[in-house]
Image (cartoon, rainbow, N blue to C red; front, side):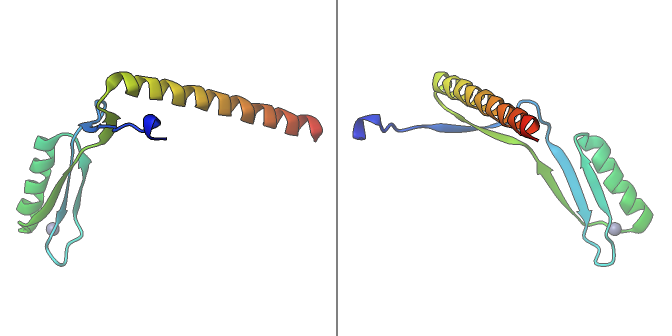
Length: 107
Ligand SMILES: [Zn+2]
């Protein structure tokens, strides 16, 4: 039904509770050194430079990773859908609980 179809706009945002993490991998062919993901970029880069100071390896593949979240551009519609998903989740959880109770009683 054409009337029920609507054009929906989405937005992609950095997740508010996440930080940008830095990881790095040494590109020396005989080395498997990696920097563990860290949100402290200064400390991460210092750690990479220490690896160079210790080994002479000077080339790294660095990557920055963030967590993205996609939301509806229409915030009121976004809130409505989140609330609807929560209600559905609660309803499903209650149904599973009831099924569990039934299983316990019949065993
Ligand atoms: Zn190395």
